[in-house]
Length: 314
Ligand code: HEC
Ligand SMILES: [Cu+2]
Image (cartoon, rainbow, N blue to C red; front, side):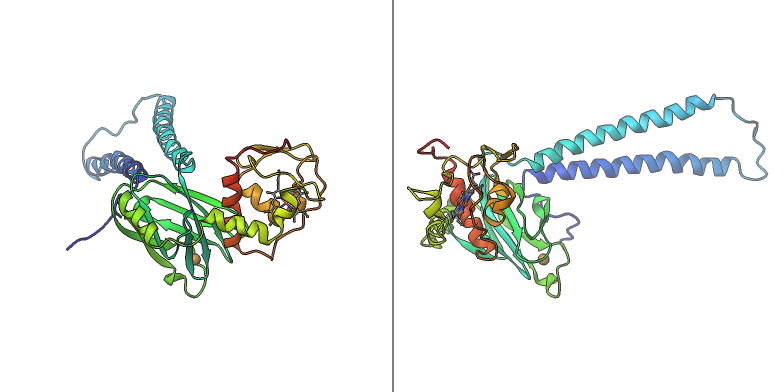
C-alpha cells in the first residue's frame, strides 16, 4: 500500500522547499538530543543515594552564556539566509513566464489561458515552462494551493496576486482551496494536469476558442468605449496605451508608479485615484460594469499593447 507522507515533488521549487523543511526537522532533532540525552544521563548519575562529587563546577558563567547564545544564533541566521533565498525565488517569476489567469469564486476556480481556453477546477500546464498565475477573487478570500508544487497563495477580492511555478513531472496533482470560504468550501477542489509541451499544444488546439484573451480584451476595449477616448482622434485627450505596460508612469501629483497589473486594474475601476500627468481626470469608472473575467481580458490586451511603441509621444 502506498502511504504518502509527502506530496509529489512536481515543480522546480518543491525539492528546495523540502530540503529546507528536512533541514529544520534535523536541526530540531539535534537540539532535542543535546538537551535530553545529558538530562537523562544526569538524572541517572545524580540519583539519590549515588555517591558522586556534588560540589559546584567552576566554569565562568559568561563563557557558558556566550557559547549557547552565539552558536544557535549563527545556525539560525544560516537557516534564515537559506529560507530567504527560496522565498525570493518563489516571489519573483522569470520574465518569460506565461500568464494564466485564475478567478476564485464560491465555490470554484475559473481559469483562462492566454490562448483563450477556459477551464473550471482544472489547470492544464506544460512541463519545462514557467507559469505565472494572475489571480483574484470575485467574492471572499480563497487560497490557491498546489501541494505538489509547494505553492499556496491567498486570493483576495479587489486585487491581483500572483504565484508562479515550473512543473517538472508529467502527472495529475491536487488543487485545493485552502481558506475556509463558506458552505461548499470542501468542494472547491480540482486537479492540475501537467503535460508534455507537445500534448499541451495539442490540448490548446483542440479546445481552441474563437478569441485569445487579448482579442477578447480588444473587443471589449471597443464595446465599452475605451477606444473612443484612448485611440484615434477623439475630442477628449487620453493617453495612448501602447508601450504603457511595465513602464514607469508619472502621475499628476508628482509620484511615479509602475504600470503593472495593479495599476491597470485601478486605472479602470478607480480612475480618480491615480491621474496620469498632463491629462484631465475625465475617465469614468467601470466598477460594477465589467466582470473580473472581462477585466483580466482587458488587462492582457493592454499588456500585449505594452510591447508596441506609441504612435505619438505622450
Ligand atoms: C471619457 C474618456 C475615457 C474613456 C471612455 C476611458 N478612458 Fe481611460 N483614461 C482617460 C483619460 C483622460 C486618462 C488619463 C487620466 C487618468 O489617468 O485618469 C485615462 C487613463 C487610463 C489609463 C492609465 C493610462 C496611463 O497612461 O497612465 C488606463 C490603463 C486606461 N485609461 C484604460 C481605460 C480602459 C480599459 C477603458 C475602457 C474600459 C478606458 N480607459 C475608458 C479617458 C478615458
Ligand atoms: Cu474557496
